[in-house]
Length: 435
Image (cartoon, rainbow, N blue to C red; front, top):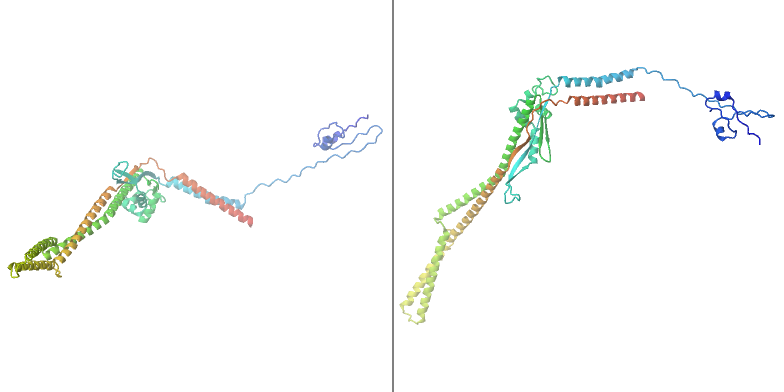
């Protein structure tokens, strides 16, 4: 079997082309060698003509781009720097300098309290047997919350403390202090800046933080707020008592006047008729009528017994019996006519008027007793409903100033300025690109 020809690549081609691997002796029909490198020329054997092999692969060098030129400072760059200095650096420096060098220190005094009302409960109605319970009133707390932010408390506290002197501009700070000669409206607005009032809706607790330029002044302001709140609570209690007693007093006065009128009418009636109690006269008149009726019956029976014996007509006893019966009947008629003869002064009219006046007096007396009892109950309830201020935290005295928050104010102001500067730069570049 003839020997398989061996590939011998020229050394010059392999060394000049660094992309080709090192020369390796391998069979010609090896598919891996054919895929990796070009097949070189085959060396002819004895008695064979040389056959040219494929040409070597030429590798082109990649095209290199030219390097960028160094950036140069242009006019728009200077405009951006100037804008940064004018919008960010300069204002932030001025604000920080004012806060750290000129702004006066502010001291904080804190306290908290709530409004309570004692309601006395009947021990027989209370399951626990307690005589009184203390409850909070959210409506009263809301009233006090509005009062502490109003102009009225500024006027009330200004009578005890000179707020213009406490918050005045004698410290050199013209932003965080009260202007000289400020009006009451300006003092109210400045009061809302320096006094923080927070109300917890659920519990009704009021938390107050007062700021001043000395610790003692801040504590004095909180003390004045506490005194004015107590005075307002006393006024609310007084108003509640007056409201509870007002209608009861009106009803009591009306029932008293009605009773006076009823008694006066009855007295006038008695003075006119000269009769204290017509019912007694009517009762006595009825007694007389009863006696006369009894006597009439007895006389009629006596006559009947006399006639049963068949006496002669000339018997005088018959005439006497008739005379007695006629007299009794006449007297009965006179008594009846005296009671109801149609005249207004008759006993029937007198008794009817007396009974009407008596009923009116009795009704007025009962109404007066009911109104008196209602007034006593209302007064007792009003006395039991007492409001008071329950202080949870007494006014504190600060050791170091907490305000103004210089770092926070400077940071927020710097962020706002930086954001504004960035927006202006973006808008400027966008307009330049569109132009």
